[in-house]
Length: 327
Ligand code: TRP
Image 1 (cartoon, rainbow, N blue to C red):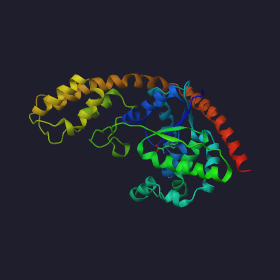
Image 2: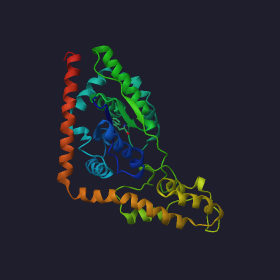
Image 3: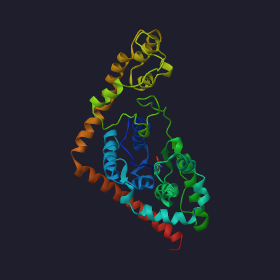
Image 4: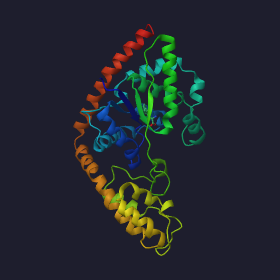
């Protein structure tokens, strides 16, 4: 039986951090053994909000490919490609835009949120409103059965299904309905205790050296009520303990869970122990990053080859689309 198709993408709007690794990449990596996977860098999506300053996009695309490969995505197993190298995405986007009612787009929660909250950029553009139409094109292009995403992307998937249904109703059955594969992962705290996010400047990046990671962990916020070493702390509200629960061995977690509460152990000791395990976890990734960074030709070949493979599938879909639309 043919493997079902999985597709997902990420915007190259910054460097990848530990939250991205645990929340998405580790999951993508598992899926590449069970499914026919397509993973792509959504560089056009990054332009929808960053159109005024595009100077970083190229750099982030390259670093993202390196992060993906270093984290274990395997171009022998999955098709790894770049959206802008498969121009069919733009063609399908424009055709889908013809049938997408604008009120559907104005209702999208991420759209409303960003329009209300983002003040340093003008997001009242045609491109930004059309963000989910481009995403629908990305997904429908590969007739993907499953799309691994976080919960925030579910409305985009819903809209993708609605656009696909509307297309099928007008022109005949071309697109199957994709389902989200929800990536369940506890939110990773950043160094300030809030959710790890590049907009908070509290991230541990995959591209950082062990020295930089060490410095950040040593300055990381712990239980804010525990001001001095002799104060008892509460691991339940401590962001450092959240990291312990992921990276430190069970015995250490149990030890902290008892000793922190009676000031038997200090935050500095906990940080040092966490660092041992965190740095060991990151070491092979950083090793692969180093090798890949020194070999730009290899990176370029991988992304070109993946984009050619994706392009072959996209060309077939576009033939079916044009035939259905009598173009
Ligand atoms: N909107 C997604 C995000 O911000 C990125 C994305 C673009 C995507 N196209 C996609 C995700 C297609 C899944 C499938 O995370």
